[in-house]
Image (cartoon, rainbow, N blue to C red; front, side, top):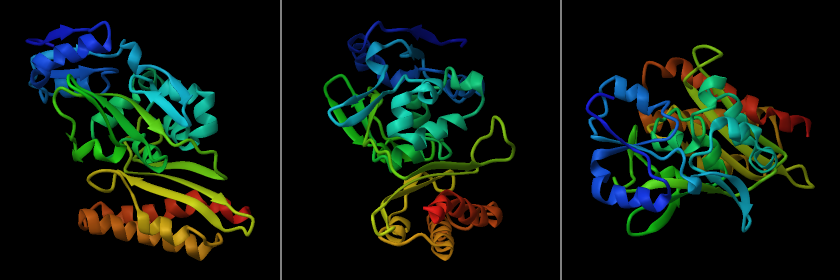
Length: 284
């Protein structure tokens, strides 16, 4: 941290006052699992390190007015241990289970994972399928945006320099199917090469309803695929249908990102993971 100055505000208002004056020269520190790596690599040229990890306004997981609130400073371990999340946001709970190793989960925060704007962020596909909104605070006002709009591009935030994420509001769901899938180069401490999340219910006619699907790590920013959802919505589960959904997801990936050398395996991997994720519905 040579040449950096450190500031730890006692509450959100102190933080916003400081950012009003120094936002463009500040980098926010919560868990530090990304910030410290980038700093050691010489990729951060800001003068101030602003520690927001102890701001009480950024804590907590609770149901509020029909929405599931998750504070931005909630760690991945806290996500994993949350009974509310297991009941109302199981895809995100599963993503926390597959997030790095225990030591990293103990300090890494959901807000930091989203704000880093990595295309392989494991929390983003589940947040997308739960139609989450990010609640932002700045010196002059607070606002909310769909979580998919936090990133302006790969590792590029759309937030103003004086803003920070204070938390997320998710649409709680306890569907028949809620899942997160991920593959990488090894089993532990892995950065996702492909990750995805899905939700689906079944109606009395054994047709899929409320289908949500999001893909990460394969496009510049993770995103939902509306045409995959439309293909499955109202249909009865079937092997050919799920393979077609996987083919469509892979086709979208290539259209959005261009055909890259890694897509030799990613194209097949996406198809296989889509099938694996939805295949439990075959036994419904």
